Length: 545
Image: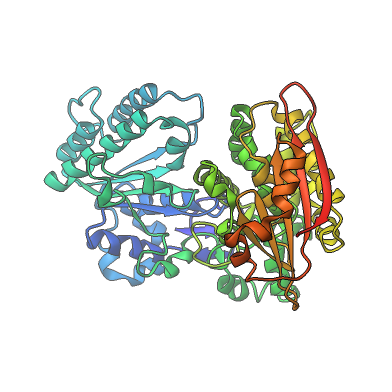
């Protein structure tokens, strides 16, 4: 079908307005994957870029009930082999948009079976008696009684994995359902195509065979850079930069295409959001609009469970993202002391998942194309994310307070150059007060992690971790070092003695500083933390022996 880019990705007919982008040629890409044996396929793109529209288009193409004239004049007609398959299948479309965090798995499966049976009876009344609570058997019966293979379309497919299968038991049950359906279809050949549209990169990778997880995902992800030709598939949704500068050139030649591109936000493969683009043009309005309601669930759920510490308080990388900086996950984690705390893997899993949610809602873009893991990400629109923050924190200044602390990182760097320990000490104390105010005793963030998050990514220093010590190597030209030492609830005199004599007593430390014998400033922080009192910090500056 054609996606009408003058509207919000509505599924329309050929009689729409003139400005439109023809995405029908990508049906051939999907059909080629089926011909290669990939009958269960997933596609991923941020919300608002036409995932559901494309899924509807594929369903309409294969559906025997769709008039052939709908596709006359489109690019797919040029592919004779693919177009010959038009209208040859029985099609069912499933939309999981209503699934949310109150949906129970058993109720969900019951509803799936009941609603499938109801849809079959309505759309294909020639079908005989259907099994009551056996979804795969219902689909097999539909194929047998109609004499047609099935095309199954799933919209908002990732919502089941986001909300319903949160425990290992339910996740494995969902996996078994799909593994059984796939095995049954391979044996009896009743499913031609099952197409799942998602918004979170890589989420269908969770769907593996429960008994053979090493065999890989049950779904073939056409949007993954692992697949041959995936770069071509970037254009199946949204509007590509090439389309924007060709289709729009005649009608909007007075607008600078680069500036227009910046207005709209950019995505993997140079995609822009049609509704944003044309709403802005029509209204001569530079403001970017986006639907953020689906992003809020993750933030609110995390705060409610206490794991918000990982995302919004403990992980300053996310705060830097909210502050308008580019976040490079690989660089942040390269020398991360959290590796030894037992939280590292979980923290980064939460952080990356949070970035993926924002990406799925069109709020975050990828700096590097084909970066499905979001290792390097940046905000498309800060105001939209802060709107999410305002809704989640309607009675607090949580993110605003956090971002104000993050904004002091330049002051911290200058203070380190001046051997002034007080600035970082004040920021860390305020950070702990912020945690206590908003998260109480639910935070799982260590003080060492907090220190690292505030000093990491400074332009003039390389961070080297050594126990409770952070060695800052000056990379600005001259060889020099500074040391930040952190302790919690220890005897201060003993702490200072051990720290100031590191170079004399530790061969491992001397090796890390390459035998450097010059002046090294030490900034030592001893924290007094208790559940019953406010956090306190003693900050000292001295020279290493």
